[in-house]
Length: 125
Image 1 (cartoon, rainbow, N blue to C red):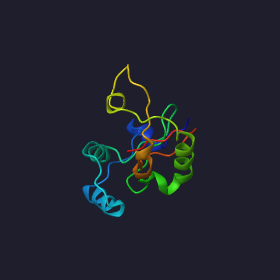
Image 2 (image 1 turned 90 degrees about the vertical axis):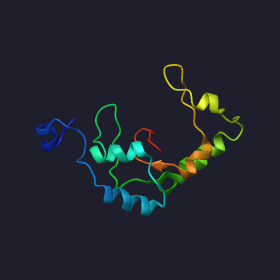
Image 3 (image 1 turned 90 degrees about the horizontal axis):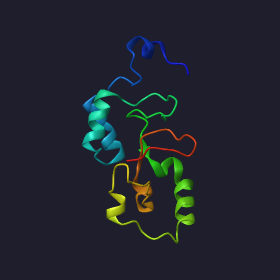
């Protein structure tokens, strides 16, 4: 894997932080408020470079609604899971080593895509 000279020199794989103004402009563009923890992350690192085992987290100017780029994915998920029973809050909100990867299809249409897609993986808010 090759890293930029800046990443090697700084020993930092993150992308330089963004400003509150850029975050506010993106919230206006998307007509939504970003979660506080994600806003704080962007003030430290405006995305994250791709490296083995990690997909690239997009910078503030690249994030968009998941449906904008991937409506086909959403349609396939909904069609293939139409007979799947709904996931309870108890199952969905279980975190830690006993948790499972549950997907609530109803969230896909309104999810924000904050990473590039790689091998069928993508990070959504």
